[in-house]
Length: 238
Image 1 (cartoon, one colour):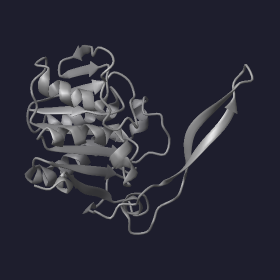
Image 2 (cartoon, rainbow, N blue to C red):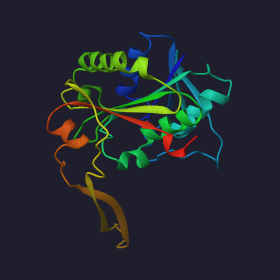
Image 3 (cartoon, rainbow, N blue to C red):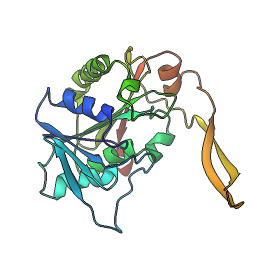
């Protein structure tokens, strides 16, 4: 049994990933009910969680991606999964910063903590309009690419490990494994703005640093390759 989650909510990317997963074995999607980017592995401990069934094999939860993984495992309300697939995220999750900020990857961290293998999929995009299905491009090509990557990774799945897959904007490319991650592709910017009442407020944003040659983001963005990074809990020791 496979569970699909993400941090974009009921997006086209999640539906594509569910479709591909169901070619292999039984699966369903349990998604945050709204967009929850950059929440990392945050859990909802201060308010009730509410499950909604949108249609067969598609549920939402008013929580985070990590909540979705734990709910799938322990609630008894949905089938207990053996594998977690997270995505397809709108925007890449290359660079080491994504390992500590991405909600898509946060779901995978909780999966491997609980002893489940996981794979995260992200698609390189420049703008943020993930709501429009047409902006996802050739979804049949994207589905074929995801399926090709899963063919490679399925025999490699193991407890305590997840794979971070980043797909270029073209939705195709040579597959490369890399552990050479750029630390960050953003320079943090705090913008001060004024609201209509004349009061200041602040907006956390960033400016691109560009790609460092040879690193994962360079392989993805400049060379158009599908990058796969193995992430594990090995640092904890035996």
